[in-house]
Image (cartoon, rainbow, N blue to C red; front, side):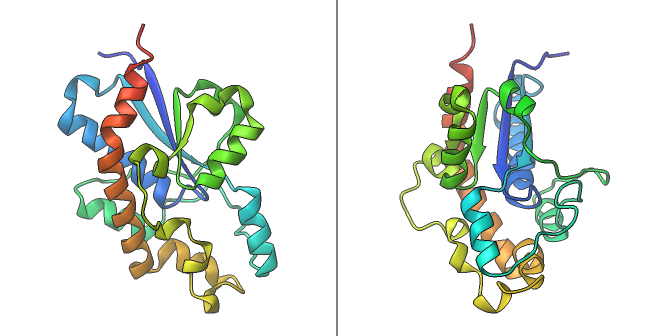
Length: 199
């Protein structure tokens, strides 16, 4: 049995869509492309709400679901993973990124550049191991999932906001497709960064 040597954490806001999708898809990519690394690279995910995001939601009078973490993966994302041959365990729950997780990670890949920037300020000793998916994938185009204003204004003034960004089929399909495209580009670069830490 192989021993975990590297810990990779994908981070999005609520840990219900982009980061668990990345966790499960990236794990599958390892099993299919680099079987010798299965069990060596531990891939997980978590949520982190950046201050800029909190300010925007407060301005739009959008409350956070209670509780925000400890929820199941979004149904639309679970279905999207199933379409890709991945079954999410029924007891899987979202979780918030903790200082202990940051300390134990070898690489943290955030969905948003503002998350990378804020986490690097909160955890300056870990800044060298925090990167955004845009950065790692060398993505230089418009990124739908970075744009807070990509959500229709009609859905940004009440609790329907979360229903839209977490469960709307069209929104999630575009979100997952974009995330998957970046994961494909980022895959070799992520492994290169992790394996460079080998003694």
